[in-house]
Each structure stands twice: as C-alpha cells, then as structure tokens.
Image: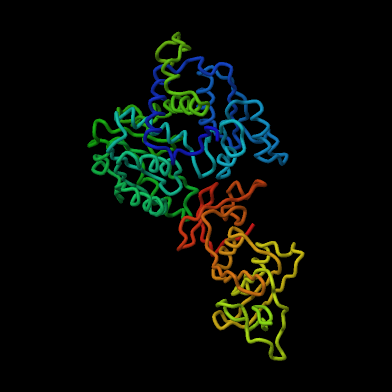
Length: 321
Length: 176
C-alpha cells in the first residue's frame, strides 16, 4: 500500500501532530530544493483554482516540476476515458498525483489502483483532507494548541464538507463545538451522533450575536448558499442572520480568530478584515505549508529529513515567504 | 426410498433430522420431484425474491439438475419458493450473499439422500460486487469497477459504501 492521502478522518492524534510539525518547518523555510528531480501531477477533473494554485505553489517552492490539467474539458475524459486509464497513464510520468474529482470516492478508488501515491484534493461532497489539514494547522498556530478549544461553526453546517471534516479530525483533542446555522442547514444528525459517540461536547445556538461569540476561541464561518435552499423565502429570511459584523466582536476573547475556507461572499463584513481577530487570509496562506507537508509525507519524506534538509533557499525577502 | 426430495414439493418437510416425507405414497395431484441424492436445498425463499436468488448463485449457468418450485404453499410464509440444486455445494461466502435479498431462507446440504447439514444465512461483514450504491455521484456508478460495502449495523441492516461513505438500508438495495 502506498502512502496515499484520501482522508484524514482515520489519522491518529500523533499523525496529525506530526504533520503539523512538518508544516511548521515549511512555514519557517518554504523555499527549498527538497523535491528537485521529482514530478508532481495535478489532475483537476473539476476546476478549483484556489486549491490547484496552492498545491502547485507547494510543489514549485520545493523544487518539483508540475504537470497536469486545470480543466477536465481538455482531457480524454470527455472522450470517454475511464478514471482508471487516466491514473494509470499519468502514474507513468509522475511521482505523486494530486487529484480533484467531482465524484465521491474517486480518490479512494484511484489510490487502490495507482502505483504512485494519490493526494485527494477534494472528491465531490466526500473528503477534502488538505483543507482540514490547513484548518488544523491554523488553529494550532493561533491558539498554540489543539486541545480543549471552543470551536464555533457558523453558516452551512449541513452541506459544508469542511466543517464535517474538521469536526471529525478534532475528536482527539477534547473540543467543545458550537453549532450556529439556520434550520435548513443545521448540522446533520449523523454528525451529532458522531459527537455523542466520541464524547465531543456540542451546543446549538439560535442566536448569533456578541454574547454568543464571547465564548469562542475559533469562529469558523462558512458560506450560506442560496442554491441550498428549497424555500427561497426561507433563504431571504435567514441570509442576513448569519453575517458577521464588526460590532459583534465587541466581547470576543483576545485569542479568538475568525477562519473561513474562502471564497467568502458577504458573510464576513469587509470592515472586519483589518480587525486583529480576522485570520482567513493567513489561513489560506497556511494551505501552502500544510500541502508541502502532505506532498512530502506522500512521497515518504520524513519530518527528520525535512529538519535536516540542506537545500533551503534563504535568498528571498521575509515578506514574500 | 424416503428423502427430502421425493416428497411432493409443497409439503416438503421442514429441515428436521432425517430428510424425508412419508415414504412412498404421494397424493395424486401433487408435483413429484425426483430425489436429490447429493446437493443443496434452499427453502423458504420469498416468491418475489426467487429470481434474485437464482441470479446471485448464477444458477442459470449450472449444468447439473436444478428444480425450482415457485408459489408453493407454506404454513410459515403463505407462499414460498424452493430451489433444489443437484451435485452442487456452496461455500458459506456464496450462500451468505443470499442474506441481502432473502435473510430468512433455510438451507439443507444433502448427501446420500440425507440432510447432513442445516444452515441459516448471515449477513457478511463486507459485500463484494453485490450491491449497487444508491448515490448517483458515487464513483462506483460512473466507472467500470466492483462495488464494496461494509456492514455497519447487522441488526438494523445498515451498509456503507466503501468509496463514497453513503449509508443505505439493506432492505432497499439494488443488486449490481
């Protein structure tokens, strides 16, 4: 079995902490030649510019070369080629395959047939482990720990893949979750059951105001999408109730940070961008370091090797990474 | 000769002890099926599941004698179906597939006209290439590949797709 990354749902606490330590190494020194001579393929059967740029930057800053496609229209998939054939073909060229697919389970299937490791960059509504990894890294980075935190999840908790993955991955760290969502987009019963089975405390809130936010260490915002509603009247009624405004942060803890998987539409008021609690752009930046760690881990490069790496490039000004 | 299968099919005795009905005398208007000296009897199949059972065991590909009784009277079930397969013994794995469509069938293994073993089927831990995923966005419905399900809750009959993680109830599954 190769070291594919399909999901982090089954990762142990130790493995998550290990990957966080590796990501931290890359945050300190993101530019290296650690992957010189390697080829990373990025196969985006479904377009996702943000995720693709992040993975490709991660590979490029480690000295790898990148092949792939950003848009499935240009591939043989439109001629009827199976996923298996595409994977088998590309695995002849690349050392690791980063893939995004609109079908659920595509990454797991690819990992079963591929001779080279697969990194899941999102498979439909199923899994998106690199997003979860960067969320975990960001939480660790801002709080100094993953243990015993109050994590508030706001917005679309029904379809939001990122909040489900985050909830599952945090089970090792004794969190308390707070769910804030309109009824139509409430946290599904299966995940509440998951919480009960794993001893994760959770609280559901009707209101979203300064008093509720006062208890948060992490405020994780998501987009409430119009197309999720069967009843558009209901959408009109609730859409503004889950917008975060600057005055709602009046009682927030100093350590509280606002995260968002991006893209945002209007759920975080722009005035908040300059507030010290805002952290979503740094969070996106962390995606680079998390993905550098995930690519290296898939290629069998250990934390020790990263620490002892002599290929660090020191020439760039600090601000530009 | 008394055996499980010389008796007329409708009153085939339940699978207790020595296989056999009343020796010899068979009421006239009943269907007579020749004795099964070696083979397998699958009894108490719900009539609406008979053809799925046939498909699951690939009986249409068999060359030995297969006797199928359909819409027979049953005191337990009202009507039932029964299949007798000569000279063929199935593995537990093959038989346990039946639990998906007919969890309450009874099985008898016949050797030399005797019931040497009685069995019930039980739901296996994994279902390989048997069930179709009901999630249209699952990779298994869009790629030429085998499906795989894990049984999450045997009591409730809940199964989970290995690939997309969607759960479904075993009573409602479609076979591949």
